[in-house]
Image 1 (tube, rainbow, N blue to C red):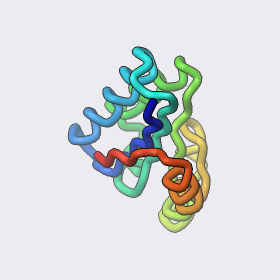
Image 2 (tube, rainbow, N blue to C red):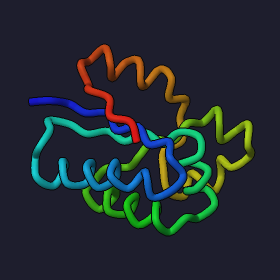
Image 3 (tube, one colour):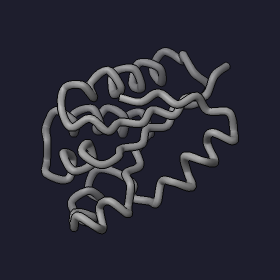
Image 4 (cartoon, rainbow, N blue to C red):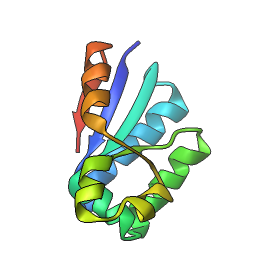
Length: 109
């Protein structure tokens, strides 16, 4: 079975298919594992309290999954604290490289 790395960068409704797919894949067992990473504009939207994103992050949390957001971008733009309310905040470059090495298929939204 496939392992999937969902990378969400879009700051608006274009990100919704990524969140929807991740939630449904976990709920319906479409993949062996699903990890969600937020990058750039998407993580900024979460830090600013965007309800559209936060409702999906809460659904993931209810399923025992917490997305990871890029610490470096959050540090540079000064929103680590607000972002930590909703996500894990880590340096994701290494995480992405490791998941690819482990055979995860990237999906980018």
